[in-house]
Length: 193
Image 1: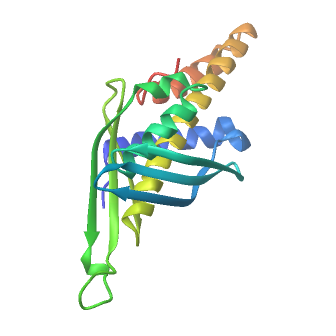
Image 2: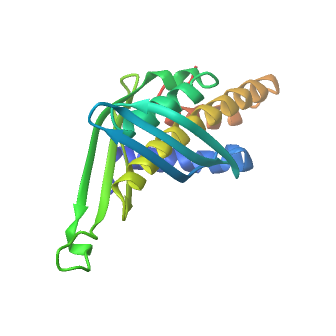
C-alpha cells in the first residue's frame, strides 16, 4: 500500500516532534463521549480526553451533529492559546463500514473507517482517519487527532524558531541551515504565527 503525499508530510512532521519536542509533545487521547440527539434540537455532547495523562472534560457542547460539536469545542478550547488553529477548516467527513471485517451474517458488527479532511489556511487538504467498531468513537478520535497534530506542529515550529535564533547568535550556520530545512517541512502544513 502506498503513502499519500499528505501522509508523508505528516510522518516527517511527527519525526520532528520526536526530535525537537521529545517529552513536550502534546498527547490527546479520547476517553469517553456522551451524545444526546433529537430531531428538534442540536446535538449535545460531553466528552473527556487525556491531555498528557490529565483528564480534560468538556460538558454540554452543542453542534449540528457530534463532529461539529466536538470540532467547534476543540477550536474554542485550543485556539485561544494556539491562534493559528482558528484557520482550520473542515472540508469533508466520511464514514465507511468495512463489511469484509464483519463476523455476523447480517454484518451489523462491521468496523467503521471515518475520515476527516481539513485544510489549514490554504495549505492543502489533509486527511485524518480512524478505524474502530464505532462510528462515534472513530469520528471523535479523528477530530481529536487533527488538533493533536496541528498543536504539535505549532509547538515544534516555535521550538525551531528559538533554535534558529540561538544558533545564529553563536554563528553556527550549519545548525541554522539544518533548523531552517526542518522548519520548512512544518510550514508546508500550515501557518503557526
